[in-house]
Image 1: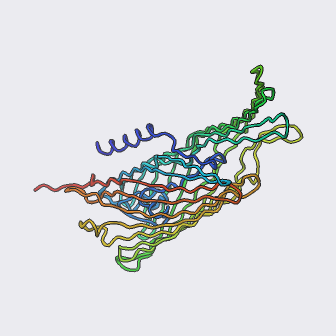
Image 2: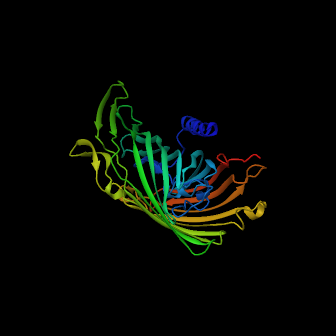
Length: 430
């Protein structure tokens, strides 16, 4: 019990200590920010594959039905970080940016026979960017104007999940999350001519609400060492009870006199409904090969937008702000003998790739599509008492691009450590 309380405390302190995950992407200025894939260390090596993955030594948040496979003798604690280098390119200009991010902290254990429990902390989205552009205002005394765009914040979730094996070969599960966070975005329009007013727009929103996801897994055995697992998940779409705000401030540079207009959209933010399905084929307990598909119904979600029509400004919900997001992932894992005490035989080799359609619409055009590939290793951490802990390392390349828009190329290193201890083993003394 003391060790269990220690792990819970560790997750709690991680929750308090972690800052918002970083990003420098200008695309995070739209919607709820840059969405995360919410995969853990082993899954990141397969580019986020996991709907059909079942293992007794890993916490697989992507499908809560998988918690029923957690070994009854162990307590699992998994924490991950990442570092990334991103190259931004537009109109022949290039710039690089670096980030180091907290990725996740999750834990899992078997509570009762056929019932596994998991809890932890995950990022949901990130907001972080700062850039500007300068242009001339016609031929008026060589006057120029500068638009400066900045933003920060994002959303995190703490979750508690359960997975129950209803009968052999069929499991169901649910993740209940508390979603919280905020974003701050601004657009400052200033002029080189001091007699022209500076116009600033500030967008803010805070979320404190729930998130609910359910899952199921069906395992079809072919032999003692080979099987096919089908996985399905459903994410509940609902309003978040948030009141996004827009402040428009016009400031006279000569007199410093400001005029402020404030607009609020009641209950203006929403989560989309999400449907996912996948499969994982296991052969001889050595090779795992799978594919996942996910549909995020963003097209049904409106979003607040500031605009001016007939010289009358407004901040209202806009329909068709997003498009449905489709994501396809394929991946594989190979280990000659995962349970071997020989180091090389127990290494886990992983590969993955994915493609996502754009869900953003920017100035009437489709936003960036996303292509990514990854490769990783699961390295056993062994001592006299423990042969189950694993160091998960992966490298990932992500490309985001759209016609006539900014292109991003990101190289990311993910590092996760899965501590798998035999906390609940009872020793017999003669």
